[in-house]
Length: 224
Image (cartoon, rainbow, N blue to C red; front, side, top):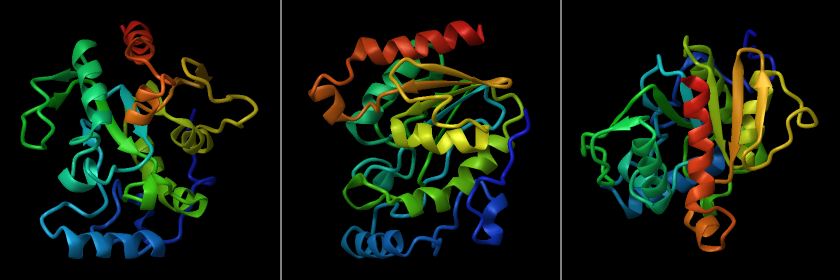
């Protein structure tokens, strides 16, 4: 299957880029939030967060957006907050990462046959991007999908990530409803759904460690 950009938002010539510019102007609300964060915390990353991992990986993990205290601060996806603690521990367990995760971008952790990106590249207020922001930023996710030559498996962390991936894969929501542990076929790709590994989901019991591990165990078995 060929991924098409026809469903992706393409408001500027940046559509072929893998990550927005540091001062990307495309989403006014996120721009204002970014500028306020820069003024308050000038030593933080406070910019669009680039994907992490090798472009030749067979697995792509898609999250929602950078967390305020996590990737927005450190500049690396899922680095510096609880979601990263659970995600990277799981990736290390199943061989999708090597080294030691110490919640900072210079900890030496490397991904193995795995890449991580977000549906929205800038931190949104209250961790809630607007639909127009999700649609606008999808062009960068599409560009990443198109430039991963060995891509076979996509793990969507949460419904927004799931929905954002459906359009470039050519799937309708009715064909591939979101559900934890669900697997959807799209040509040569498989889309695996998981509840997001946020502290809220784990604290409320929506997602347990075993539930999260089971998704990556399935991915590992299918890729092997």
